[in-house]
Image (cartoon, rainbow over all chains, first blue to last red; front, side, top):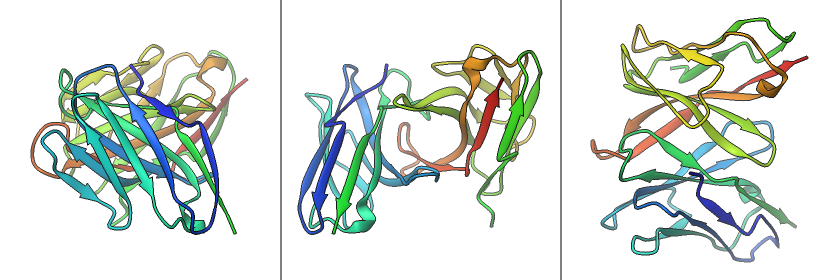
Length: 112
Length: 117
């Protein structure tokens, strides 16, 4: 079952902050964030694991609320390069390895 | 180091034709997977493999076959193409950041755009 991402789209000016969210109805082991630019493949940004471990992009931060099965990605002091579609992928405890379910994406547009 | 290579990049098929999308990785990753991406639907898992000789179904496996005879290759076969299979297909290989379950980082290929008429 796909995680739910919100908001669907965000428009912000360079330097502004934004938060995008991902929630799941399943017990999660991990939450993954990827960014896709138009016409390109998704690229890994961040992984958050049950128990608090995080690994990924240095300039992007995220949180994972294990009890609520929710994650948020924080785009701070946004740059034009942050534009793209952000996908969260969730690794359910039940499925274990490699079976990520991706949401429909958050479209982020950063304007000068 | 090419990463994940998908071929072809573009393909047009007629309904009922069969074809194979090729995927090869040179990173010695155990895990490989196929996703399809449709407008407004995100990425949906078709099939995946946790190693040579082992495959399993994802969310939307109907109409597709896979096999994994080597670590490097993971082809996706469309047996009898239908217009509903018009999509962009991404192959991904992955490794675990921590060595444990659920910590796999996906490296995607550039995608194959398939149109079925």
